Image (cartoon, rainbow over all chains, first blue to last red; front, side, top):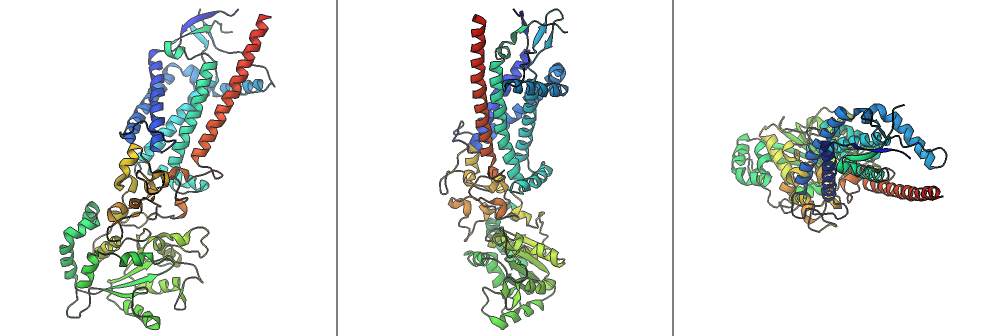
Length: 220
Length: 343
């Protein structure tokens, strides 16, 4: 039988950041859909939905900045860009296994109590998820700000207009707005996958309490 | 011109009409206008002629030069409104050419088609334009067609039309064109531009040669009276309903114009006010870049005919399906593992 040990996995700062991003993300999604006239959503029937979207967007951006800082300073070992090739290999191997044309890879997560450190803290694909989230947050932030501060983002409008010619329009604003809207769906897609992965890899509790029962492993 | 920008044309004319009349009166010489009509529907002429409260237009025609009995602004040649016709009418162009140097204004309505199209008096329109352009001291393109090609330039553009400025470049005519777009052109825009030209005022133009005082502001951000609806997320679902027109295809977020201040037919109304969406007629690339007219701005770029909304919904549906399939298989394999363990 595998041995398990309770480990303090996520700091309070990280958890607050995470859940704040979740809450502000939902507010942004719903106010954004209200502003775009999508699906009849109206969460602020009498209020300035644009003002809320902008203000919350700034907070959302700030939270991502904090989280990015935390990742760079504290978690770079697990979430660093150098781990992306390893994550891709893991994803390919698992996909093949799922299709029945290869062996499953054992869950690599483990904790070494003697050394008091993780052997592996995360499911490798989390690295990709984190960076995709980060890239999408940047994309949403830049396109959102560009729509509001047009003069300051004039060069982006020129680039967007040039790209737009391949998609039936040369208008930079239309392209930026379309990218912002598509970004919302991509964000939702990654979020769905993230939520699903959190459930099947049993890590939801640790993002609430900070603690998780980790398999005991030693570094080989 | 700065005051016009701040106040809007109607208020400006009401407040400063007398002062303007005095200033123009001091010019005391004829200004000659040649108005050419190219590939267009003549809606701009109608728009101009229908200005029921013409303000400056009235001033132009009521100030007489000396004892001549003639107004300070002479519309020497204007195909659609002049009483003369045939050869006599064509001779009027020569009168305009002989007008005082520095005081000959050429107004062009309509786009410029390629050779073989839009023949007037046995000559192609571009030839007429080529003929008069060297004499023009000031050139004003009035209406979307004259400025950027407008509706006649829509794909597939069978007559090869283009705007006056573009034609000038092709023909090697080195003249600056003041572009006053919109479909139709607005009489206030034209009359105020004319007065600025006559008074020697510097007209600041944007990168498309449009006067900044009229086309320097973004409809959606700066002027739209329905913007509060957008900010509150209240949308008209079909033309005529109350609410922001964004969902029914309003192109206000990408259109620089002051239509909401200016209005048409004697400052009575404009497209958005009567429940229709803005179709972007003040911008270059109209109409092709703004179609479909009744689809929201974000839906304009498309991949294989699908806008970002449809693509996004497809991605989400595929993700949900993938999660569902994976989830079912995950649960089933867990159960079989449990059964194995029990054995």
